[in-house]
Amino acid sequence: MPSIENFQLLIAHLQDVVYSVDVETKKFSYISPAFERLFGYTADDIHAMGGRPEFLQAVIQGGKFIEQDKILEELKQGKLVERFRHVAWWRCKDGTLKCIEDHWVAVHENGQLIATDGVLRDITEQKRLEEEQARLIAELQAALAKIKTLRGLIPICASCKKIRDDGGYWQQVEAYLSTHADLAFTHGLCPECRPRYFPADFTPEPAL
Image 1 (cartoon, helix red, strand yellow):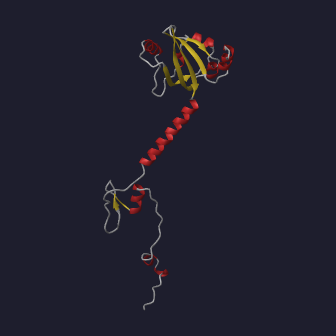
Image 2 (tube, one colour; image 1 turned 180 degrees about the vertical axis):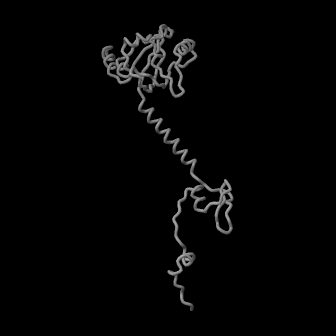
Image 3 (cartoon, helix red, strand yellow; image 1 turned 90 degrees about the horizontal axis):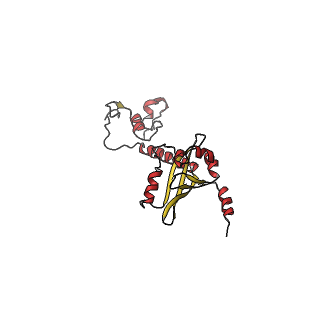
């Protein structure tokens, strides 16, 4: 079987952070070396800041603090499931923010809750990609919502063919349709209209 030393070596080289929080003190009792690599805080820094996980939480984008005391108390009372997943933004020592996925389980000894052991994973890039995807989808939906369609009756002049808009102004049919539909116009003259504008170019067909 693998020795404790082998497990410690494995944990020391993990990219994810392995930790344990003591239920009585509500402080970290163990943090793997990846913690400093991920957040920049040393063990001394954590001790100086009280040793509790909450100091890393960054409440942004409508988020809220994880109330560790409340969670641990409800765990003791059996009100919560003993496996927990939480995603939140955590603040690093240099002030940058990282999106962290926190998985932990309740640890019991002789029927008593003694600790919560967990793993912290940096999912910042995944979160950024998800947010970018959501933004692009929202923009696409907004663009689709703005696709212009014409419905109902159109008030058009029987003589000049101008169209009356919602403001009561009369517009050329091209201007109206360009505004209210996804249309663009090219202009030319049909065979019936061309002689009126270019009579010199028109040669009537000989009578039979």
